[in-house]
Image (cartoon, rainbow over all chains, first blue to last red; front, side, top):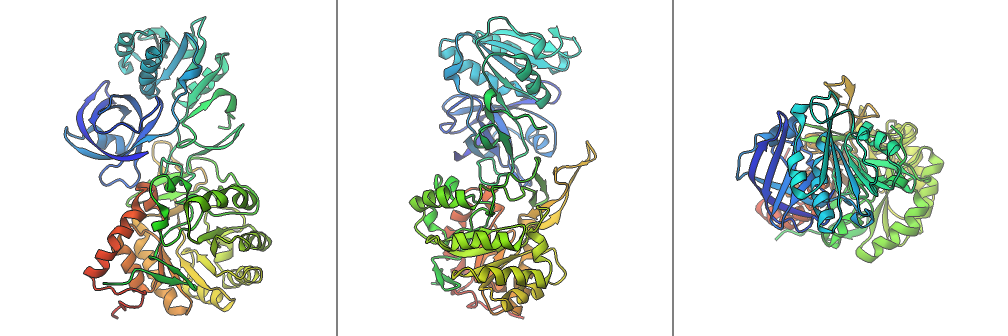
Length: 244
Length: 303
């Protein structure tokens, strides 16, 4: 973890309430896909955790949905705004166990961290399947970006206005070797039930600090108490205890 | 140049800055970020007899200039702390640590205090009778003079280390409770723990925190904490540790001006993990700017 000053380079809407923000700054503490950063915003006491969508040595891409005061403020940040960012938080996905054809399942703003994951899996010689789930056609983003990486992409919408009608679990390929999931809790539960291979799921929780100090985001797992921010957000399927 | 070191119940601190319990774990996360030996000391995570998971999540909410938490004393239990956390801490922290202790009965407080009394690295026992987030015990012991005195007396009977009672601001007269603790043998008083509060999510109409209520901390409670330090330090002769919303070196001096012998920093650590380091680095200059010569009473409050 490092406290890094990032500068907003680009901040554009992808859909009516989902934004893509590109920042410049030192990304050296981001070591694995699925990690997140925690952003200090003016006038708000707690930082805002946002998953890493993509990075190079000196650029960081974040995708966020406007859901409250913090993300609203983010959406209005002009270029060149400087932000204090705690970078390189959380454990991230373990790509070493993916097998040949890993399946990446993303729901809504659970999609972004899968982008860097797909990139690294491809760099590792793997052939990922990517299934992106949204409620409706007007919410779909990043389909082309995943295709451009060389992934086999399927989009599902709940109302059937785009791609296959249904949930990500209605579009599972036959021969995937492992799965990686990120999305809302009901989706994660459905994926956990439907997918029979090994897998890793990324969880969300209201956080205090984001680096393991406050115990604000703890959950129970088969292997003991874990802090979503520090021991997660990614949990192996085998260790999950569904409580909620 | 003012002197940064202070005396806390007979143990000298290089400076008065102490990360508050519950915001600093058992020190290890922060030791990865900076040399924690620069601290006066720190108060480790509230420790109980049995391991505790704490409350369901969400445990955290935000408010103007602060936050609420209802963690509910999650900790691995005193045996685990002695076996794993303290040996790990010893490798990165050469100073005495403050052991924060909680319980749901007087027997629990005594049990944990007895075990931690034997630990060489523990300098002080900070007895938390002010946690607003647990059903049994916690704040229940800190809201009457009789029960606060009873816990103080029971703990004092099993330890030779200085006992600092951490009090709740959720009372009518905090000074009288502090006085009751002093009369029961306490060596110091820490004020304040968090203020009981709540937030509601208008989208769902439900409380944000699963526990419904939580403890408010952060800069928004600083004036309340400062007032408590002022009242308590005038009611007792034992040292008072100021705690509540401290975020800057100026806040530290304000606390000392009100009567604090040392000052705890809580929520600020969660927003800026380097908060205590920055405060310590700035403290000398800020002391000199205000001609503060140290030892708490050296800049007496003008009334």
